[in-house]
Length: 331
Ligand SMILES: Cc1ncc(C[n+]2csc(CCOP(=O)(O)OP(=O)(O)O)c2C)c(N)n1
Ligand SMILES: [Mg+2]
Image 1: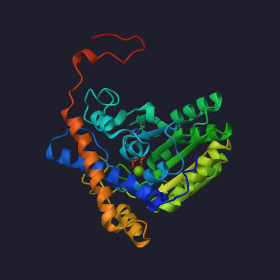
Image 2: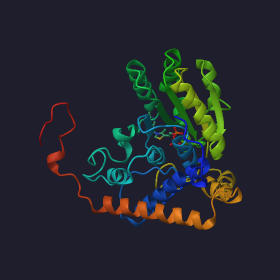
Image 3: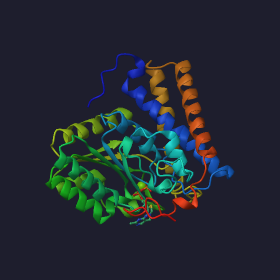
């Protein structure tokens, strides 16, 4: 469903995108801070640099009922989809109060109530799962769209190609979102991928493919809105490639010494989060006092969820075998 037309500046789509991006940004900053200080020990893959893509996706007509499939580098997508921060952080911390009782951990976050169906660490494996979810919606006619987020590296995996083929053949309600951050672990895009644009590959499967600047909120909003409308109208899938940049190493602790320094510096200078803040000021969509007030609220919201996660207990040993098999097997 398209979002209502903006009636006040706070409703403006670019303002909404900024507030979601700022929430993602602050969450990531706090988690990295805790990993650095040793207060948190977890596998963590920062989405820093990719905030606008996720935030634009969230404000393009995706509803809570729609499905999301994402990857280990997924907190931006999970937050944008509306997953409660306390359940998300507690899961990352491995706590009993987490969305999966701490047994999924950061790589396997699931929260069906907000449509966060699958988070996977197996590169490319989310696409066929997303096609399965979209097939279920097609059969049930439940009106849901499945959004599958994955990286540039994943587009070189066989499952990407199989999934695009089947989704197009069956005209499934799915949007494939390739977040092209120009690196797959330590392999740069140019060293690992033949296509000039990943979106060009869509033509081979008879579906629209569009490459957008993932740092440009309006371009991303437009691309996601068209793809979602098309999926919801029963016209089939779209491949949206949003070009971004990975500001951190592959995993937390990876210094990224293999990254091109000039390219890195240029990307950082174009950091999309402060750039959108500046755009809001320039267009008069918010003034500095209003932005600061929102940022303070966001910081407090993140702090509350961090405290909840920190203060929560770890799951007990009696949980070990529960939720593993269909039949519950107590420890
Ligand atoms: C099937 C599979 N092969 C290899 C790996 C190891 N691996 C983990 S992340 C990654 C890079 C993926 O890059 P990309 O799809 O661009 O996502 P990004 O990390 O940039 O978000 C690789 C090769 C894996 N997890 N799964
Ligand atoms: Mg990548």
